[in-house]
Length: 76
Image (tube, rainbow, N blue to C red; front, side, top):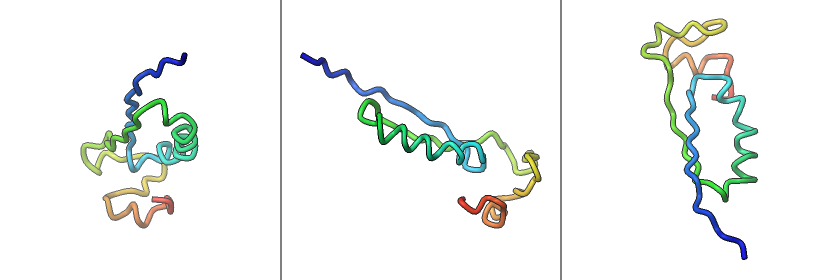
């Protein structure tokens, strides 16, 4: 007899302007599709930027929320 365990709550905390977070999406979707019946999946959007003045990553293509649409990140 198989004992059914309660589902585990799994929280994924992501930053919408983090390219690494977007890069993880295909693997995360595959993980959820294969093992999602074992857990309740929750996405939490956040970020480490207090202001846009603090963003200094890479080529610094993001200066404000509108620049996301004009950036080198066409998948956003």
